[in-house]
Length: 427
Image (cartoon, rainbow, N blue to C red; front, side, top):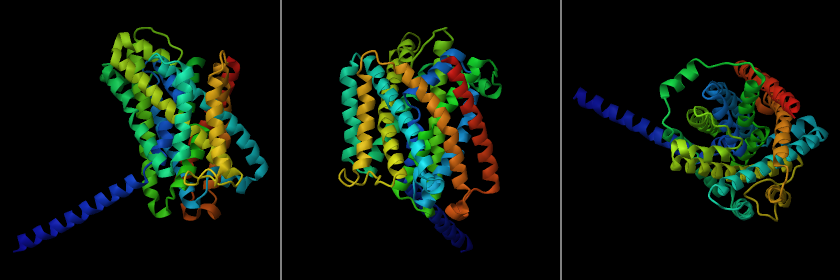
């Protein structure tokens, strides 16, 4: 009888735990989105190019840097998501309230120019990826622009988010192509455990580039705005925190496979490239046609994905800064400034690509300089806001989190300024 009693109790306890597990999992999937989308979209055309160059020029020697970058991204994105959940306001809205309209105005000008330059780069990625399949940019870019514009203008937040989450899945093409490159996993493990550290200018510049392309200013604004638009409550914050952690790991897993693939193919064969398109084309003789096509498809997906998000981030940020309506759940007539800014950024970015002989490299170059200048400012504003107990209450940073965040932000500020100096010297 006692045995039967304990069996019954064990069955009930097991049933309760299983029920809690499935409830927790269902709530997580209902709230998932902002963290995963924000992180993955940063693997855009510029990011893929940077990772491809890192692998083709330095082999496996830069893989180690992805470990500290992952933790830095988690720390920064977690603070942004927390502010969005607790305050119900976007980052630019909080900056205006705390630091005034004048500072916010100049910050928004720099952010708009930076995001426009990045959007141009994304449509360049669309053009480059489809040229591999024999499609002219005069066909691919206008179609891509109309598609991303229609996607955001016609659908609400939940629908758009689902499309973006599906787009995240297509980054698996880089993992598949990386495995098809037949890497030596023992050698890769050694590269993490015994990193080949160098201190020459070119190596350090590439290391800074990897960090800069993984943690960009616009990400902080978009993440916080999308958390607010999703309407996440403080009671559900733990799910958004997990969303941020998963997204931070996902983006760097993809970065790992791109660097690794180019290292074990292009670097080992002494092949030099200049763009992600070059990498896709150069992979075919060594890793096979399907590996090359998967790489090119990944570039197309990443470029379209980012070409949707960057203009959306711009619209969110600027509208919040000036107190205008900013939500995908509003119609065009209810939020004309929001949709107008989105449309302007999309069609201006796409239109510039269609100009013959336009100095795209110049735009991409100075966009990175602006990114480097803006990132330290945004991070310092974030830390001041997240430590304001009048704003955050019990959700303000604790002592441990402050030590981790200030060390992380200080390191990123130094690296960001170093990147700006190196870019200016190189130019």
